[in-house]
Length: 208
Image (cartoon, rainbow, N blue to C red; front, side, top):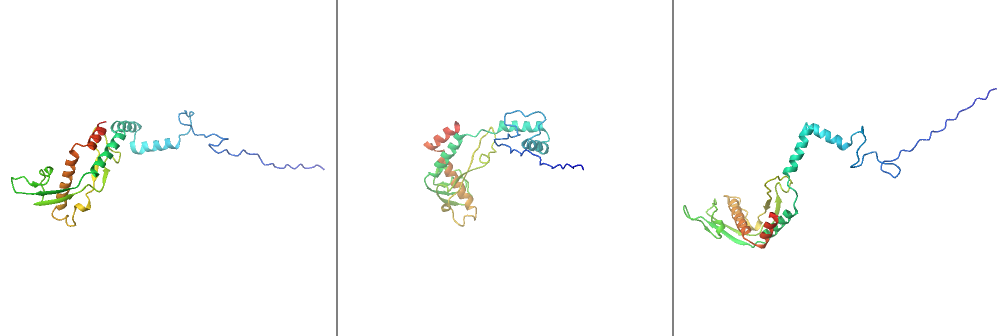
């Protein structure tokens, strides 16, 4: 009798997969500044850039031209301008209160005003008075806040909020609010035009 040899299948020893980025294995992704080998598949960032170029720009040359144009028109972020805006905000909030009045005296005559800067206004009502006070809030708005301002003109828009104590509940009638807003802004601009330490610091920082 012949003995039949039985072959017992032994389990094959497979190597355990090594996780990327561990001490035993190295990442297959190319490092920054290291040239990838020829024929390597593109990364996820490159695939996303290719798709964006094809869908939005239709041409790689047009995308490069747009990127260079943006570099030329976008101004650099300046900390000195931020300091100037903060100085301006502090000066506005520290202005003293005042009593403003404007009264029309007829055709061909200058209006009767409490402050000289109000004489050039033309209001809808015959007589307007306003208890002026510093604004409640001074906020930075516009294209500079959204980082969309372009060269060569660098404009910074500032919005001020008139305090409630300066207005009445019925001021929405007969253009009263519009007249009072003109008085408020005219006096604010005249006060900021006066030379002071804060305005000098703001002008120096802006010019720098």
